[in-house]
Image (cartoon, rainbow, N blue to C red; front, side, top):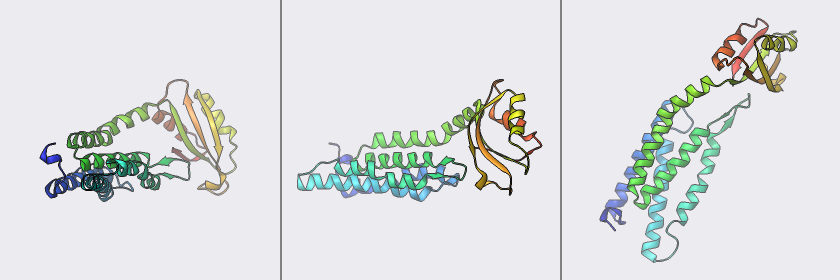
Length: 225
């Protein structure tokens, strides 16, 4: 075993500092996007996981007993409480925070790799997480915008029957499904509010469908979900 992988005071300091740096790199991207879990959260998660693995390795070597990865296994499953806390369901039944939760879990895994001295996997994994959260995010957004299916929340003006909306989308060759009425969440008193999934037969993008919906004078509010 190389000295850098042995459990010494110097190696422990290197591992903890490296975990803080890698967690900070990932958390910086989340913090810049004003997510619930940002720079400090990712630093703490990655460092905490690292300390758990160091402690587990110490117990295994010092007392020559136990499972050297048992505590790490508890981190992998136990980190779920932080992930669950970052996931929210909005009033429009939108689920947000899944990427942040996945990032926290992955950051904990990087911390475990650093804690056991597997520096190569930690560095490669940390770099990959950062790339996924930054560069791949842009690709994901482009794919979403080009999607031909759109989940939308609509409010019609007071007194306007919902058939007006269906007649309008039918004339634009747009199919609808998954209709859910939402009268309690309407911004305008007495308005007909609902969420619906739309799909264009003509291959219109999400932006095009929203643009068409905005032309309907009877709508008071339209929001993509």
